[in-house]
Image (cartoon, rainbow, N blue to C red; front, top):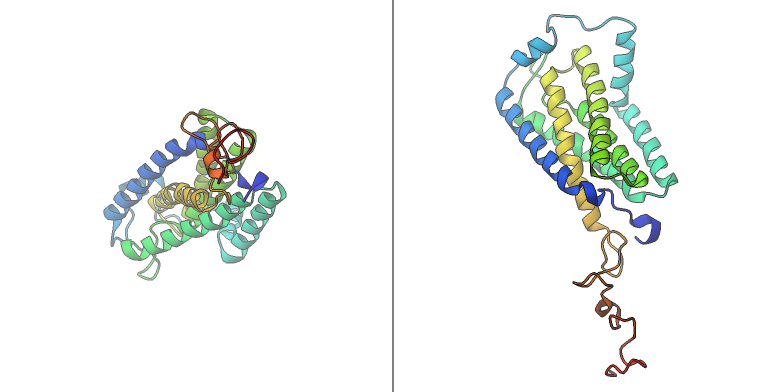
Length: 254
């Protein structure tokens, strides 16, 4: 991809910090999975954050929880992803569209795999609960949108990280609350889904940026540079001052 299509999905100023966040989030997912592996009861943290004996929330909060839950169901998720992809293409950010689909898909896929590996259940043996796939999905989409906004606005590291983590936290907390309120997950399941997206989406974005390059080999739409910071003409059949080999600059003809 060239020109406007070559904008990286991971802004360069955030890559190192997002890598650190992804590593910590992945470690948290593993530790929580080990702690609750094979369990079927709420842990101490779960009991402090919610009452397992409660019947959930009543109206109007239950309607809000059901609406949020719908966005993570097959029909709702397809509608939401389609709308976000259309928005990415409208502002000419095809890589962001790819991250929206791939990041959300990878987040849900990893969460589903972890459910079978961890084996934690809620309300019966057939209801695997850790981590929450709905929460992973919502957080992944929020990350994709925030990364697009960071790149479009040209934000620096501090403002960019605040925006990305803020979007992720709001979306993850909202969907996590809905899942707990409806009795579908424990709070720690929602936390696991949130951390799953934080670990998976930056890695997915990095892979997308690595996979999509200019035909001339330059990454992220930028020309290749020599060691001193000037354009590396050796890759383009010329000298550093822009004179082609064998031209009037006196270079050897071939």
